[in-house]
Length: 400
Image (tube, rainbow, N blue to C red; front, side, top):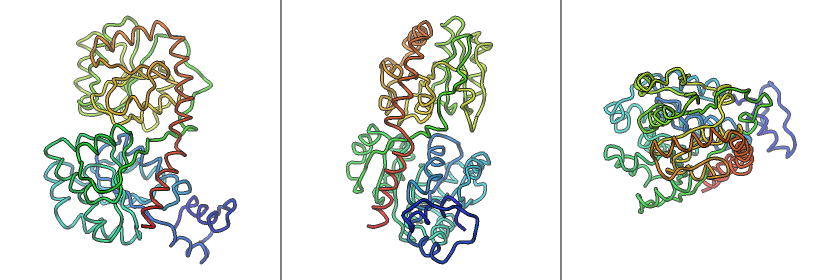
Protein backbone atom coordinates (compact mmCIF):
# COMPACT_ATOMS: atom_id res chain seq x y z
CA UNK A 1 0.00 0.00 0.00
CA UNK A 2 1.40 3.39 -0.99
CA UNK A 3 1.57 6.29 1.43
CA UNK A 4 -0.58 9.35 0.71
CA UNK A 5 2.52 11.24 -0.40
CA UNK A 6 3.52 8.47 -2.82
CA UNK A 7 -0.03 8.29 -4.21
CA UNK A 8 0.03 12.05 -4.69
CA UNK A 9 3.26 11.81 -6.65
CA UNK A 10 1.89 9.06 -8.90
CA UNK A 11 -1.30 11.01 -9.66
CA UNK A 12 0.71 14.16 -10.36
CA UNK A 13 2.93 12.22 -12.74
CA UNK A 14 -0.07 10.77 -14.56
CA UNK A 15 -2.09 13.98 -14.79
CA UNK A 16 0.69 16.53 -15.06
CA UNK A 17 -1.18 18.68 -12.55
CA UNK A 18 -1.63 19.06 -8.82
CA UNK A 19 -2.13 15.78 -7.01
CA UNK A 20 -5.37 15.07 -5.22
CA UNK A 21 -4.64 13.20 -2.02
CA UNK A 22 -7.13 10.81 -0.48
CA UNK A 23 -7.20 7.68 1.58
CA UNK A 24 -9.16 5.68 -1.01
CA UNK A 25 -7.94 2.41 -2.47
CA UNK A 26 -5.59 2.85 -5.46
CA UNK A 27 -7.26 2.64 -8.85
CA UNK A 28 -5.90 0.23 -11.51
CA UNK A 29 -4.35 3.22 -13.32
CA UNK A 30 -2.42 4.18 -10.22
CA UNK A 31 -1.32 0.60 -9.60
CA UNK A 32 -0.04 0.44 -13.18
CA UNK A 33 1.84 3.68 -12.69
CA UNK A 34 3.47 2.36 -9.53
CA UNK A 35 5.21 -0.29 -11.60
CA UNK A 36 6.91 2.51 -13.53
CA UNK A 37 8.32 4.14 -10.40
CA UNK A 38 11.82 2.94 -9.51
CA UNK A 39 12.06 1.52 -6.02
CA UNK A 40 15.16 2.25 -3.97
CA UNK A 41 15.97 -0.01 -1.04
CA UNK A 42 18.25 1.82 1.38
CA UNK A 43 20.45 -0.62 3.25
CA UNK A 44 21.29 0.50 6.78
CA UNK A 45 23.41 -1.65 9.07
CA UNK A 46 24.26 0.60 12.01
CA UNK A 47 23.80 1.14 15.71
CA UNK A 48 23.88 4.93 15.95
CA UNK A 49 21.64 7.87 15.11
CA UNK A 50 24.32 9.91 13.37
CA UNK A 51 24.45 12.31 10.47
CA UNK A 52 24.14 9.57 7.84
CA UNK A 53 20.97 8.24 9.41
CA UNK A 54 19.41 11.72 9.77
CA UNK A 55 20.38 12.48 6.17
CA UNK A 56 18.53 9.34 5.06
CA UNK A 57 15.36 10.38 6.87
CA UNK A 58 15.38 13.67 4.95
CA UNK A 59 16.04 11.95 1.61
CA UNK A 60 13.58 9.07 1.95
CA UNK A 61 10.79 11.32 3.24
CA UNK A 62 10.56 13.07 -0.13
CA UNK A 63 9.43 10.60 -2.83
CA UNK A 64 7.89 13.38 -4.89
CA UNK A 65 11.15 15.28 -5.13
CA UNK A 66 13.36 12.23 -5.66
CA UNK A 67 10.83 10.58 -8.02
CA UNK A 68 11.23 7.09 -6.53
CA UNK A 69 9.71 4.87 -3.85
CA UNK A 70 11.88 4.54 -0.77
CA UNK A 71 12.18 1.46 1.46
CA UNK A 72 14.55 1.08 4.43
CA UNK A 73 16.12 -2.36 4.97
CA UNK A 74 17.32 -2.09 8.55
CA UNK A 75 19.70 -4.18 10.63
CA UNK A 76 20.45 -2.56 13.97
CA UNK A 77 20.85 -3.32 17.68
CA UNK A 78 19.32 0.09 18.46
CA UNK A 79 15.64 0.60 19.24
CA UNK A 80 16.33 4.33 18.99
CA UNK A 81 17.46 4.05 15.38
CA UNK A 82 14.48 1.89 14.49
CA UNK A 83 12.18 4.52 16.01
CA UNK A 84 13.95 7.30 14.10
CA UNK A 85 12.85 5.74 10.80
CA UNK A 86 9.42 4.52 11.88
CA UNK A 87 8.50 7.83 13.52
CA UNK A 88 9.38 9.57 10.24
CA UNK A 89 6.66 7.51 8.56
CA UNK A 90 9.07 5.62 6.32
CA UNK A 91 8.49 2.12 4.97
CA UNK A 92 10.88 -0.06 6.99
CA UNK A 93 11.75 -3.73 6.56
CA UNK A 94 13.35 -4.51 9.91
CA UNK A 95 15.52 -7.58 10.44
CA UNK A 96 14.99 -7.21 14.17
CA UNK A 97 17.58 -6.39 16.77
CA UNK A 98 20.99 -7.72 15.68
CA UNK A 99 24.42 -7.75 17.25
CA UNK A 100 27.03 -5.17 16.34
CA UNK A 101 30.64 -6.29 16.74
CA UNK A 102 33.48 -7.39 14.42
CA UNK A 103 32.51 -11.06 14.49
CA UNK A 104 28.84 -10.28 13.81
CA UNK A 105 29.93 -8.07 10.90
CA UNK A 106 31.94 -10.88 9.32
CA UNK A 107 29.15 -13.41 9.75
CA UNK A 108 26.59 -10.98 8.35
CA UNK A 109 28.73 -9.91 5.39
CA UNK A 110 30.22 -13.25 4.40
CA UNK A 111 27.48 -15.63 5.51
CA UNK A 112 24.26 -16.62 3.79
CA UNK A 113 21.24 -15.94 6.00
CA UNK A 114 21.36 -12.14 6.23
CA UNK A 115 22.21 -11.76 2.55
CA UNK A 116 19.29 -14.05 1.71
CA UNK A 117 16.95 -11.96 3.91
CA UNK A 118 18.09 -8.73 2.27
CA UNK A 119 17.82 -10.17 -1.24
CA UNK A 120 14.29 -11.32 -0.42
CA UNK A 121 13.40 -7.77 0.73
CA UNK A 122 14.70 -6.40 -2.56
CA UNK A 123 12.69 -8.94 -4.56
CA UNK A 124 9.47 -8.32 -2.66
CA UNK A 125 9.85 -4.56 -2.99
CA UNK A 126 10.84 -4.90 -6.65
CA UNK A 127 13.95 -2.85 -6.03
CA UNK A 128 15.78 -1.56 -9.06
CA UNK A 129 18.38 0.26 -6.94
CA UNK A 130 20.15 -0.62 -3.69
CA UNK A 131 21.45 2.48 -1.90
CA UNK A 132 24.17 1.72 0.66
CA UNK A 133 24.78 4.24 3.45
CA UNK A 134 26.98 2.74 6.14
CA UNK A 135 30.23 0.80 6.13
CA UNK A 136 28.56 -2.31 7.51
CA UNK A 137 26.06 -2.22 4.64
CA UNK A 138 28.69 -2.27 1.88
CA UNK A 139 29.40 -5.98 1.47
CA UNK A 140 26.00 -7.39 2.40
CA UNK A 141 24.20 -4.77 0.32
CA UNK A 142 26.39 -5.39 -2.71
CA UNK A 143 26.00 -9.17 -2.51
CA UNK A 144 22.21 -8.97 -2.16
CA UNK A 145 21.87 -6.44 -4.99
CA UNK A 146 23.97 -8.56 -7.34
CA UNK A 147 21.82 -11.57 -6.49
CA UNK A 148 18.60 -9.81 -7.59
CA UNK A 149 20.08 -7.70 -10.40
CA UNK A 150 19.64 -4.31 -8.71
CA UNK A 151 21.93 -1.36 -9.37
CA UNK A 152 24.21 -0.32 -6.49
CA UNK A 153 24.80 3.27 -5.41
CA UNK A 154 26.84 4.22 -2.35
CA UNK A 155 26.85 7.51 -0.46
CA UNK A 156 30.26 8.10 1.07
CA UNK A 157 29.45 9.73 4.41
CA UNK A 158 32.93 9.07 5.81
CA UNK A 159 36.49 8.28 4.72
CA UNK A 160 37.89 6.45 7.73
CA UNK A 161 36.84 3.01 6.49
CA UNK A 162 39.06 3.47 3.42
CA UNK A 163 42.24 3.65 5.53
CA UNK A 164 41.39 1.41 8.49
CA UNK A 165 43.14 -1.92 7.72
CA UNK A 166 40.24 -3.87 9.22
CA UNK A 167 37.69 -2.10 6.98
CA UNK A 168 39.51 -1.12 3.81
CA UNK A 169 39.46 -4.49 1.93
CA UNK A 170 35.71 -4.86 2.41
CA UNK A 171 34.69 -1.34 1.40
CA UNK A 172 37.01 -1.36 -1.62
CA UNK A 173 35.58 -4.69 -2.78
CA UNK A 174 32.11 -3.19 -2.64
CA UNK A 175 33.05 0.10 -4.32
CA UNK A 176 34.66 -1.68 -7.27
CA UNK A 177 31.28 -3.37 -7.90
CA UNK A 178 29.11 -0.28 -7.46
CA UNK A 179 27.32 1.44 -10.33
CA UNK A 180 27.67 4.93 -8.81
CA UNK A 181 29.18 6.59 -5.75
CA UNK A 182 28.16 9.89 -4.19
CA UNK A 183 30.48 11.94 -2.01
CA UNK A 184 28.93 14.39 0.45
CA UNK A 185 31.70 16.93 -0.24
CA UNK A 186 34.36 17.57 -2.86
CA UNK A 187 36.89 16.77 -0.15
CA UNK A 188 35.45 13.25 0.13
CA UNK A 189 35.32 12.89 -3.65
CA UNK A 190 39.02 13.78 -3.95
CA UNK A 191 39.83 11.35 -1.14
CA UNK A 192 37.99 8.48 -2.83
CA UNK A 193 39.59 9.11 -6.20
CA UNK A 194 43.04 9.30 -4.59
CA UNK A 195 42.76 6.24 -2.37
CA UNK A 196 40.83 4.03 -4.81
CA UNK A 197 42.35 5.08 -8.16
CA UNK A 198 40.98 2.01 -9.94
CA UNK A 199 37.34 2.77 -9.05
CA UNK A 200 35.29 2.10 -12.17
CA UNK A 201 31.97 3.72 -11.34
CA UNK A 202 31.23 7.46 -11.61
CA UNK A 203 32.00 9.37 -8.41
CA UNK A 204 30.11 12.64 -7.99
CA UNK A 205 29.52 15.15 -5.21
CA UNK A 206 26.06 15.86 -3.84
CA UNK A 207 26.35 17.95 -0.71
CA UNK A 208 23.95 17.28 2.14
CA UNK A 209 20.91 19.51 2.30
CA UNK A 210 18.91 21.03 5.14
CA UNK A 211 15.17 21.35 5.59
CA UNK A 212 15.07 25.15 5.65
CA UNK A 213 11.56 25.27 7.04
CA UNK A 214 12.35 22.95 9.92
CA UNK A 215 15.73 24.43 10.78
CA UNK A 216 14.91 28.13 10.71
CA UNK A 217 15.68 31.17 12.87
CA UNK A 218 13.17 31.70 15.64
CA UNK A 219 11.28 34.95 16.12
CA UNK A 220 11.82 34.36 19.84
CA UNK A 221 15.51 35.18 19.96
CA UNK A 222 17.77 34.39 22.87
CA UNK A 223 17.47 36.72 25.82
CA UNK A 224 20.31 38.21 27.79
CA UNK A 225 22.63 35.98 29.74
CA UNK A 226 26.09 34.45 29.53
CA UNK A 227 27.43 34.02 26.01
CA UNK A 228 26.71 30.38 25.14
CA UNK A 229 28.43 27.92 22.83
CA UNK A 230 26.89 24.68 21.61
CA UNK A 231 28.15 21.32 20.39
CA UNK A 232 25.96 18.86 18.48
CA UNK A 233 27.63 15.51 17.74
CA UNK A 234 28.13 11.93 18.81
CA UNK A 235 30.34 11.84 21.89
CA UNK A 236 33.03 9.61 20.43
CA UNK A 237 36.84 10.03 20.44
CA UNK A 238 36.97 11.32 16.85
CA UNK A 239 34.81 14.32 17.85
CA UNK A 240 37.42 15.52 20.42
CA UNK A 241 34.85 17.29 22.62
CA UNK A 242 37.39 17.36 25.43
CA UNK A 243 39.27 20.09 23.54
CA UNK A 244 36.22 22.35 23.73
CA UNK A 245 35.99 21.74 27.48
CA UNK A 246 39.63 22.69 27.95
CA UNK A 247 39.06 25.83 25.85
CA UNK A 248 35.98 26.78 27.87
CA UNK A 249 38.02 26.47 31.07
CA UNK A 250 40.18 29.38 29.83
CA UNK A 251 37.14 31.64 29.47
CA UNK A 252 35.33 33.45 32.26
CA UNK A 253 31.54 33.17 32.34
CA UNK A 254 30.70 31.58 29.01
CA UNK A 255 28.56 28.43 28.91
CA UNK A 256 28.55 25.28 26.77
CA UNK A 257 25.50 23.19 25.81
CA UNK A 258 26.39 19.66 24.62
CA UNK A 259 23.81 17.75 22.56
CA UNK A 260 24.52 14.08 21.92
CA UNK A 261 25.64 10.93 23.67
CA UNK A 262 28.21 8.22 23.17
CA UNK A 263 31.03 6.28 24.77
CA UNK A 264 32.91 9.43 25.83
CA UNK A 265 30.09 10.86 27.93
CA UNK A 266 31.30 9.61 31.37
CA UNK A 267 34.84 10.86 30.71
CA UNK A 268 33.61 14.25 29.56
CA UNK A 269 31.37 14.70 32.59
CA UNK A 270 34.30 13.83 34.86
CA UNK A 271 36.53 16.26 32.98
CA UNK A 272 34.15 19.17 33.61
CA UNK A 273 34.50 18.51 37.35
CA UNK A 274 38.28 18.29 37.08
CA UNK A 275 38.44 21.59 35.20
CA UNK A 276 35.99 23.27 37.58
CA UNK A 277 33.48 24.12 34.83
CA UNK A 278 30.71 21.69 35.75
CA UNK A 279 28.29 24.54 36.52
CA UNK A 280 28.87 26.05 33.06
CA UNK A 281 28.36 22.89 30.99
CA UNK A 282 25.10 21.03 30.39
CA UNK A 283 24.99 17.57 28.79
CA UNK A 284 21.58 17.12 27.19
CA UNK A 285 22.08 13.65 25.73
CA UNK A 286 20.65 12.59 22.38
CA UNK A 287 17.86 14.80 21.06
CA UNK A 288 15.87 13.79 18.01
CA UNK A 289 14.85 17.45 17.75
CA UNK A 290 17.75 19.68 18.89
CA UNK A 291 16.20 22.99 17.83
CA UNK A 292 14.99 24.14 21.24
CA UNK A 293 18.52 23.86 22.64
CA UNK A 294 20.17 25.37 19.55
CA UNK A 295 17.98 28.45 20.03
CA UNK A 296 19.63 29.01 23.41
CA UNK A 297 23.18 29.17 22.02
CA UNK A 298 25.04 32.00 20.29
CA UNK A 299 27.67 29.99 18.40
CA UNK A 300 28.11 26.30 17.53
CA UNK A 301 31.54 24.69 17.87
CA UNK A 302 33.03 21.65 16.09
CA UNK A 303 36.43 20.25 17.04
CA UNK A 304 36.30 16.91 15.24
CA UNK A 305 39.55 15.60 13.78
CA UNK A 306 37.63 14.09 10.85
CA UNK A 307 34.50 15.50 9.23
CA UNK A 308 33.21 14.72 5.76
CA UNK A 309 30.97 17.80 5.64
CA UNK A 310 29.14 18.36 8.92
CA UNK A 311 25.34 18.13 8.66
CA UNK A 312 24.90 19.55 12.16
CA UNK A 313 26.97 22.58 11.16
CA UNK A 314 24.63 23.26 8.26
CA UNK A 315 21.58 22.84 10.49
CA UNK A 316 22.99 25.30 13.02
CA UNK A 317 23.72 27.86 10.32
CA UNK A 318 20.23 27.41 8.90
CA UNK A 319 18.97 28.48 12.33
CA UNK A 320 21.13 31.60 12.16
CA UNK A 321 23.97 30.34 14.35
CA UNK A 322 27.55 30.91 13.19
CA UNK A 323 30.09 28.11 13.57
CA UNK A 324 33.64 27.84 14.88
CA UNK A 325 35.25 24.71 13.45
CA UNK A 326 38.57 23.06 12.80
CA UNK A 327 39.36 23.12 9.09
CA UNK A 328 39.24 19.38 8.46
CA UNK A 329 37.74 17.40 5.58
CA UNK A 330 34.70 19.11 4.13
CA UNK A 331 34.15 21.69 6.88
CA UNK A 332 35.54 24.52 4.71
CA UNK A 333 32.73 23.66 2.27
CA UNK A 334 30.13 23.92 5.04
CA UNK A 335 31.39 27.09 6.76
CA UNK A 336 32.63 30.23 4.98
CA UNK A 337 35.54 31.52 7.04
CA UNK A 338 35.00 35.09 8.18
CA UNK A 339 31.47 35.24 6.80
CA UNK A 340 29.37 32.48 8.38
CA UNK A 341 31.85 31.54 11.10
CA UNK A 342 35.50 30.77 11.64
CA UNK A 343 37.48 27.87 10.15
CA UNK A 344 40.61 27.36 12.25
CA UNK A 345 43.78 26.23 10.53
CA UNK A 346 45.49 25.52 13.85
CA UNK A 347 43.76 22.62 15.59
CA UNK A 348 44.79 23.36 19.17
CA UNK A 349 43.17 24.36 22.45
CA UNK A 350 45.05 27.67 22.28
CA UNK A 351 43.61 28.56 18.87
CA UNK A 352 40.13 27.42 19.85
CA UNK A 353 40.10 29.27 23.17
CA UNK A 354 41.38 32.45 21.53
CA UNK A 355 38.69 32.34 18.84
CA UNK A 356 35.93 31.57 21.35
CA UNK A 357 37.03 34.44 23.59
CA UNK A 358 37.19 36.92 20.70
CA UNK A 359 33.78 35.82 19.44
CA UNK A 360 32.24 36.14 22.88
CA UNK A 361 33.54 39.70 23.26
CA UNK A 362 32.06 40.70 19.88
CA UNK A 363 28.56 39.30 20.26
CA UNK A 364 27.21 41.78 17.71
CA UNK A 365 29.56 40.34 15.10
CA UNK A 366 28.42 36.80 15.95
CA UNK A 367 24.83 37.86 15.26
CA UNK A 368 25.86 39.33 11.89
CA UNK A 369 27.64 36.09 10.97
CA UNK A 370 24.51 34.19 11.99
CA UNK A 371 22.42 36.19 9.52
CA UNK A 372 24.98 35.52 6.79
CA UNK A 373 25.04 31.82 7.75
CA UNK A 374 21.30 31.47 7.17
CA UNK A 375 21.59 33.17 3.77
CA UNK A 376 24.46 30.90 2.77
CA UNK A 377 22.65 27.68 3.63
CA UNK A 378 19.51 28.87 1.84
CA UNK A 379 21.56 29.56 -1.28
CA UNK A 380 23.76 26.47 -1.28
CA UNK A 381 22.40 23.69 0.93
CA UNK A 382 18.62 23.51 0.62
CA UNK A 383 17.05 20.06 0.84
CA UNK A 384 15.29 20.53 -2.51
CA UNK A 385 18.61 20.90 -4.31
CA UNK A 386 19.95 17.72 -2.74
CA UNK A 387 16.83 15.66 -3.46
CA UNK A 388 16.69 16.80 -7.08
CA UNK A 389 20.30 15.70 -7.60
CA UNK A 390 19.60 12.26 -6.11
CA UNK A 391 16.45 12.01 -8.20
CA UNK A 392 18.49 12.60 -11.36
CA UNK A 393 20.99 9.95 -10.27
CA UNK A 394 18.27 7.40 -9.54
CA UNK A 395 16.69 8.06 -12.92
CA UNK A 396 19.98 7.49 -14.74
CA UNK A 397 20.60 4.24 -12.88
CA UNK A 398 17.06 2.97 -13.42
CA UNK A 399 17.30 3.60 -17.15
CA UNK A 400 20.75 2.10 -17.62
